[in-house]
Amino acid sequence: MELGYDAPDFALPNVVTGKSTNYSDIEGEKGTVVMFICNHCPFVVHVMDELIRIGNDYKNRGIGFVAISSNDVTTHPADAPELMKKLAEEKAFPFPYLYDESQETAKAYTAACTPDFSVFNSATKCVYRGQLDDSRPGNEQPVNGKDLRKVLDDLIAGNPIPAEQKPSLGCNIKWKAGNEPDYY
Image (cartoon, rainbow, N blue to C red; front, side):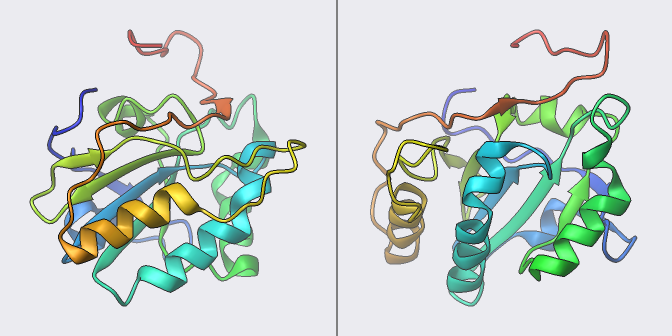
């Protein structure tokens, strides 16, 4: 999707609380980060602690966060809701971790991989679809979240967000058989 699209709403179960969560529940005053992650992906595992640090660093600065897993748990049982809950509690996620069983939310956000980041401004317009930073498993680059942190700092300061953005890389979302999106 092109930048500037409106944040699609969703109503997904929070694996920790069991309560349904929608976009307005997680929306931040200055901006909102919607992350598609999962438990098993080595790219997500590689950056997990930084995602938590970023959530903690920005949650009281007007930035809302949510993590969503859309993987097919039939083929990838490590991403099942009960294991998502266990991970979220063990790591003390500072953001809700939601389960997208139908995979419709992933499709609405045109999510393609884990991790996948969409950042929305206070008017719920997408201003960023890019990477966390240059780090990848095994490439020796530091996991520092510099790209995402720059976007969040710019949002908070009211600065323009650069249109040139490096796409996120990771494992593809594990689509249910026959449910692959047309953009995939």
